[in-house]
Length: 317
Image 1 (cartoon, rainbow, N blue to C red):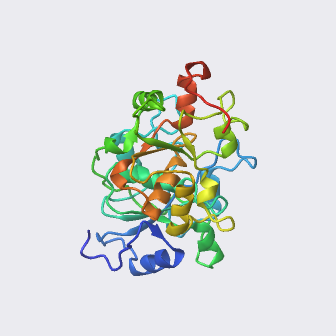
Image 2: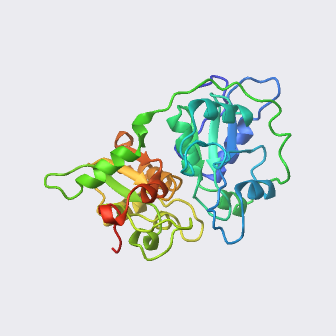
């Protein structure tokens, strides 16, 4: 990638210091065609956010200088009744062009200061399944601010001077699970000799157990047969909201009974925080990337297409 690049990032998780150094070493110019390091804000909040926050609002209030904004509520399949299904390849390419990202850019996706690690892994995962070669996640923006690295605010029209040319990508479907396959996996659970995929659920334990309501009105709570509750909060540092170190993450997964030798499907409410589990598994070296997939429709699709009467929604621990 890019023989003219001055400094290249190495691991999937990037510290504020590493990002600051990379940005200082790779200052873009109007005439340069060298690959760049681009901070990409993935700020997103649940629809029932008590403060009424939106990703666009917090991006304009405080961001990494020269960052672009990836709108999870805009870059999606608008024909689907479910909130965050992957966009078409054409729409993904248009979105990347619109925010001025080129195929050879190193993209560092980051979250909000408020939530720590939350939606950035989903945006990073989206870029990866559409074949973007160099994608990283900042761990995290809260620490970036606390450690005194620069921020800016205001509207952002001037950051993208002109759209990029982003070639039409292809979707790596081997990383995505759809509803029909998910339903078959759930039906096979507990059958004699069944040693199929493990389903990890990133929602809160209360939503998984059926004791707390879903944030979307009218949507049943509960979980898929055989799924394992792995709340995102258990994967993050309680004070910084940063992803825990690999050794601690391995202990979390082991304590849940997750088998690193078996395939894993990650799920959540709408497919956003499922990607946090995917990132944590990668950081922990737990299983192989080839054996990890994400259920794109996640609980919002599942709970609208099955029922407790089917035996496909379970409640209680």
